[in-house]
Image 1: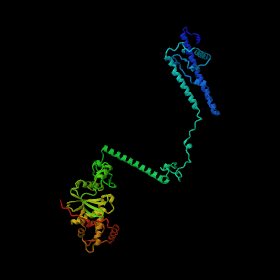
Image 2: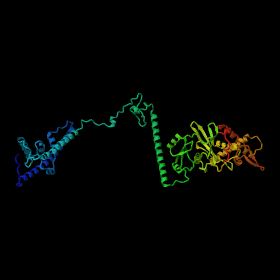
Image 3: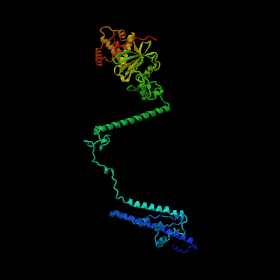
Image 4: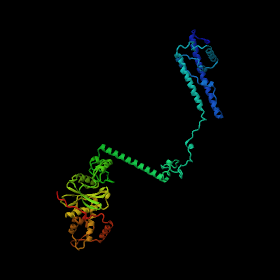
Length: 532
């Protein structure tokens, strides 16, 4: 290898001169490399523009340019840390970074020396590599050069995408001429009812034996069900939130009606008044009741479990009357205390003036039911004292809301007076009467009087005789006659007017109503209980 020329102003030490010359030569190579790379970029950009404008074949890049691009860029700081650049025999590409006459001459000298002498490569200082670590320094740099060259070649090849197929959008790839494979189908409508067309059997209404309108109708009904379900969930959440707030605040009013609805058999009934159920049940807002034993529960799941185990199919006590599917049971409050207490709590939900809840032992309960193949269902009831000093034949009377305005209330009243006739007593309901109770009793007393006047053939009539015949209290008879304007006072005597127009109206109603909702005295099997 020829010796390098020493520059002016260098020191007398050969080692320092060689280091300075190597650094200067390295700086020149870096600057030349930068200019060459910029020129190459401009050249390649102009080649791409010309290629796109002329639609010619891809430009072939010479190996020299690839070699120039794949060269490694070495900074001055890295060269100072790792020592002077190594020029091994297998990597002559590192010498192509520089340009100029001195650099080219130096590269030719190095190549000629390597061909003549197979000695190990030397460093710029003239020393041979002394260990394996010195040789390994250039190895990763060389591999880095090769990876850079591959990346550049891939970028060059990927820049021209004219040979790749163009990606089509949905409206370009969608075939609007597709038809449903079902024979006779015009591809209109969809099984879900939410689309105008279909192209497969899974969405074909004709394949599923439906029409387009039926699919749309079912879709709308499903949407309505979803909306109703969502609304019910929101209402439940609001109700639960309100209950939680009331529980935290402790502001539940003592007389407020907390139970809004009850589930009784196959009916869901809205309550009218407050009933003193236990607080843990009253604050729920809805109760579930067994229609046979009248036990109240908190949830529908508990009710179903109870109905699977409940053996009751009719009220406890003795059946004293049966006509068709109508039966009446006599229940003693002392023998069946729990049932009678539950019956009173249930009645308070629909009665305003009821005060009897738990002290049920001195009373008898007469429960009217309607029988079918599942059991005897509660229609209504009335209670009376076992020993009444005022001859009250009814203490409390109730017709369930689902059986109102069907004639069952008058049947209960008539049955109570039938018991009074058997006892040979004159009966009267306990005061005060509720609004509905007063209307029912006034209607019953009117029918009793009109029936008696229709059958009466004499000239003189007595209130006492009417009372003994019908077991109605004389006070109730007089008040009813006055309300009908049939009682007149003339010449110091009270006269009862027989109004034929009222009797004719009553006959027409009786003919229209029939005899299905009447009490038959012969169907009663009962003896008056002895006083206890």
